[in-house]
Length: 123
Image (cartoon, rainbow, N blue to C red):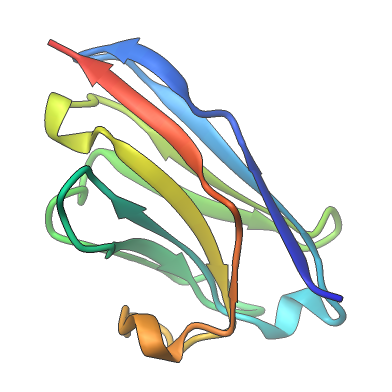
């Protein structure tokens, strides 16, 4: 059974930082594209960032480029999302996702989802 468990969410002031973690129990973790999506209240879920299997190439949505950094530790089956210079519009539930096409954030193409972690950025 595949499990993705997110942690690291919380409340932070605008301009602050948070680091999200996604611990995955998945066979051959390093064969999968892993990424992050988010869903703000009243809005559709959207792709934020992903990282390729093996060579670790990152991809970012334009809204977070230059502020967020994704990384993976294949030895620990964990993906991280370092979020800096946070803005109130970053407030959302952040979901870890696995097994989808690199840089393709179509929700229908995602194989596995985590339960989500809340990120709230106050102004």
